[in-house]
Image 1: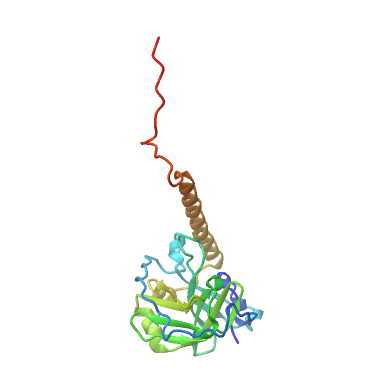
Image 2: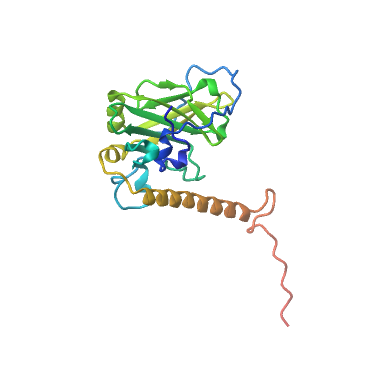
Length: 247
């Protein structure tokens, strides 16, 4: 089974031919709702140039990464993927990718969700492109950091991704609540048709995005620490000691 071993390590395409270690992250006796796709806001568009171009970290929302070596049986493997971390937390909550292998006509659609949410394993995952019908998948592999599923990508669904606005990846948590993660498809078409990105530049762009999110967290924590405790008098309402008369 050809799998990518870790969401944040998709730049190392050699692991695309390696099977990750299976690990259940939730009880398997949980019943699942009929659908796990909650209402989600439209994904924010990404004004990104082709993934192989120079630019800021945001330019790599969708990126094409390719590799060819002995670990890939000397076949070129390319992955066009969305891996942008959450701007508030710096974590990759969900991801989607299209994988192609040199010499093979079929392509694969891979989706992943962080296992920090304690996923219900039997429920699997659903994928929806814009207003299309949901695609239901079972998890293929889970490791401590995330769970991943894959399916053959049909020409119809590839065309929808190329012309679409967003793809939603949805799963069920232990509280039986559907979690929908909308990923913008803006930039996918350019990345798919364009040249591969430089792996080192992509890794650096991703590191910068995570660092920006980390700085936001630090700033928010600092602002929260500066707020007066609940019930404490505000600065405006505080009593000012009387000044002694001048002599």
